[in-house]
Picture 1 (cartoon, rainbow, N blue to C red):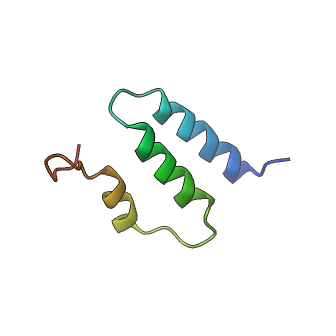
Picture 2 (cartoon, helix red, strand yellow):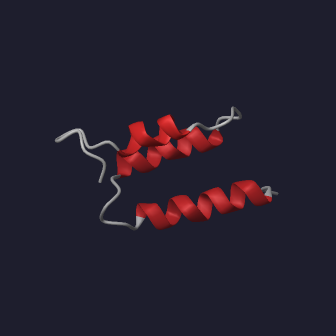
Amino acid sequence: MATLHQQIGEKFLAKLAGSKVVSADQVELLRAMLADAKKLKADEFVKVFLSADSGEIK
């Protein structure tokens, strides 16, 4: 059975996957980050949400 943390993460990722603003690649990067056991840092999230086209945060 999945832990509460895993259930919340999956629900969050499912919502993002249905979004027009977040790409499938970004969702997969987030999925990998959340699955990793290390402590997450804000800089890692910024890298995921940086636009490859313009270098701006969406």
